[in-house]
Image: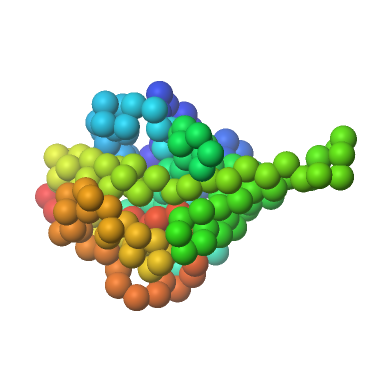
Length: 201
Ligand SMILES: [Zn+2]
């Protein structure tokens, strides 16, 4: 089933790619995702959460991913804030960032986005910082919602340097028991985290 492209505190990485059917998911997982966003309205009231690729509505090979074929895999874009002000930001998911997938954060979770300016020779740059606390709140809410729906998180893939930073967060204990993949993933995951679900009921 297709996930709504926009809600109160969430939106798709691409209206176009949602429209052509790249954000379909098992109905129970869909419920879990939406339920967790509801919970986040209270826990993270300022943040807008962006989801990425899920799978084709009819299943099947989903390039360029190796997984995402059975309606149980979801990518989430990292929640970010403006480094300067600390205010929540929305990850620039456009064609220049491959809808967020080509954003490369450094090992401290920073990302600088520069756009050429037409008026002057100076480029306009914006600095972002990953909000690790928001990732924890999201994963925690997601697992809670999944359990209610008869499913559970089976695997979380997050780029190792970012997982290291996540572990340093004060609230990490909340998600400590979740199945984070150890070691290097088969492709760079630093602009997003990948979550596999399993059905338990
Ligand atoms: Zn993925």
